[in-house]
Amino acid sequence: MAAITDVRSPLTERDRLLRNRVMVRGWLYCVLVVLFALVLVGGATRLTDSGLSITEWKPIHGIIPPLNEAEWQEELAKYREIPQYQQINKGMSLDEFKTIFWWEWAHRLLARGVGFVFALPLIYFWATRRIERGLGPKLLGILALGGLQGAIGWWMVASGLSERVDVSQYRLATHLTIAALIFMATMLVARGLAPHSEGPTSRPVQRFAGVIVLFVLIQIYLGGLVAGLDAGLSYNTWPLMDGSLVPGGLSVQQPAWVNLFENPKTVQFIHRLGAYILLAAALWHMLATLSSAPGTTHARRTIVLFGLVVIQAAIGIVTLLMQVPLDGALLHQGFALVVLGFAAAHWRATKGSYPLETDVVKA
Image (cartoon, rainbow, N blue to C red):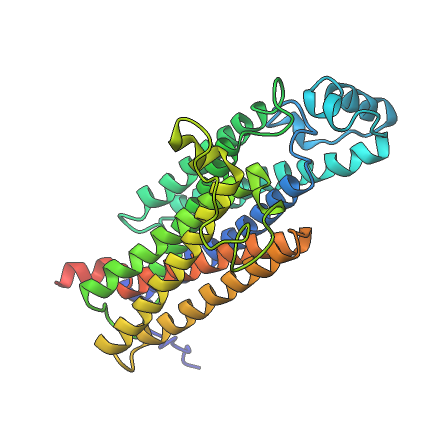
């Protein structure tokens, strides 16, 4: 009997590259999910005033929480030494301490986890030559930014362990913005590896899509300042603020620039202005793209982007009017990442996918 011959043709180099892209892209989307969860838990940690409950930075040993009564008492004793306990939570019971401890512990565990979720598959993909030329530096840059973020997280916590009863709003806003940058960079790489139904759009559309991403990042930074100063807990009216569209007392501190970062009233007002500017920019981008590239996927995405910005603005207003309940504040923070992620994906899509090495060689 004649041997049966396998007539299936072997994968071409282009097929292999496309298959690798699917694997790498799927991994990066998993990283995005973990990053999203990390930011939400970080927000809950801030909103429940839990961030100072663990007073030491133990990157390895800190994975293991207290396992018995003696270890819990030891952690509580360390917390009793810092100003937050002495001035705000004096007399806190062990059960109350456990509540804030678990928020901070979960946040640190997720931070460690996302490092492993990113680093271990990266090593595997690199070792098996699934990382395309030119992609490696981008991924290593994200990994390095993640390592820096861990150090910034402790730098932030350290600001509240000696003189303050909370962390510095400057450091909190920096920590949140770096997290947003990591999320954005991961989305850009993942979207660049995805197939696109249409080619790149015009340069003006590409540039303005990038401007939208920048505006979202600035809003996230301003939101970090608002959270750090608890600025959302006052002036809970809209559209008026303290009875006026432009309230007084925005520059009462000296020097004047300090108000931009340390005056809760000014910080909240600027955050409101930033939202209006972002909303207007998204509307302009939508109308301009619908005019210059009608009927395209690029134009349809601008409609979705504008809708997301409108929803985020509505969530922010409702959260403010309700005096910042935990669930509303977390929804507002989480949806900010949704807006940022979609804006980044849209920006990358306006420029098309990363070119395949085989296509570059042919060109």
